[in-house]
Image (cartoon, rainbow, N blue to C red; front, side):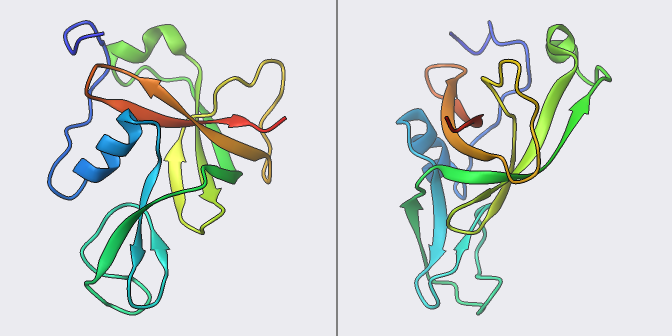
Length: 138
């Protein structure tokens, strides 16, 4: 799909997020890890929240985690989302520790719940942009 055919707003990678978006396109969820103390973090930032070090590296996350919270959006804030109402947004805590905002997919008739085990899947939006989403494990 090309960017003109996609109806929702597309993220625009920058110098701080390019590694993340390259990984998503290649089917890997990349998160930063502090080289000083080993703390993982998401979203990318210049310094570690735990020790303040500016030394970090990107690592592929295992892609597994658990739902911390979720909600359903019923309001159309952008016309590109109109056909999906209501849709969910969720906070997922990765096994490595960081929490991220995402959508839960492939739920079928299951209802999400706090602590639900999930794993990452990738949604290709365009040839250059893919997003991480999470599906129930099992």
